[in-house]
Length: 81
Image (cartoon, rainbow, N blue to C red):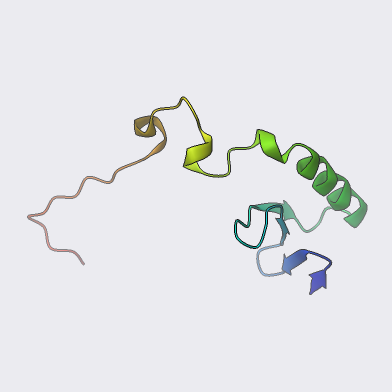
């Protein structure tokens, strides 16, 4: 089901709003149970202030990568399952 620039993922009960460009698609997921009028209002608000959001790690200026990246320590002596 397509609604303008929005794709409804019925199995997840989400509406995916594409806020970026084709080259850099910034996506926001919204509950599909929200009234269409409210979804459109929210989309307008998000578009108006989209420069406020950090869409990538590069957008988090002044924050050390160690704070935002996680690492899973694995014991190399144990074979993967």
